[in-house]
Image (cartoon, rainbow, N blue to C red; front, side, top):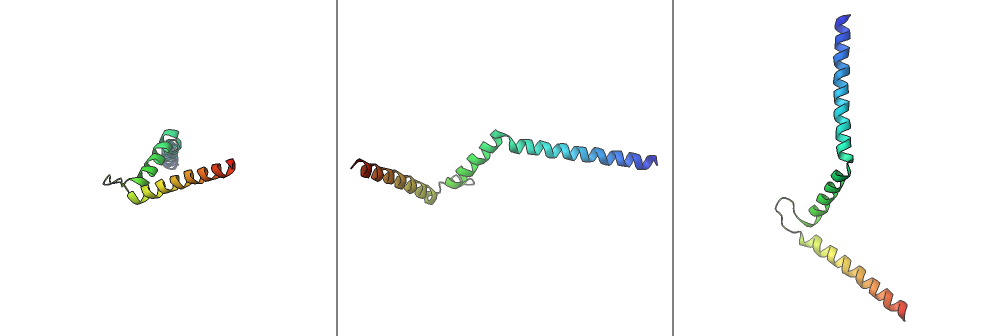
Length: 83
C-alpha cells in the first residue's frame, strides 16, 4: 500500500512540474515584448532574407507600389473633391 502511495505522490509531483513548465511557456508566449519581437521578425523576414541578409526586392517593390498607388488614389480623390 505504501508503495502505491509513494508512486502516486511521484506522479502528482511530475504532473505539477509539467503544468508549471506549460504555464511558464504560455506566459512567455503571451508577454507583449515577445509578441512584438515575433511580429517584427515576421515583417523583417518578408522584406529581408534572414539567412543571408539580402533584401527581397520583389516584396519591397510590391510594397512601394502599393503605397504609391494609395497616395495617388488619395490625391485624385482630393482633386475631384475640390472641383
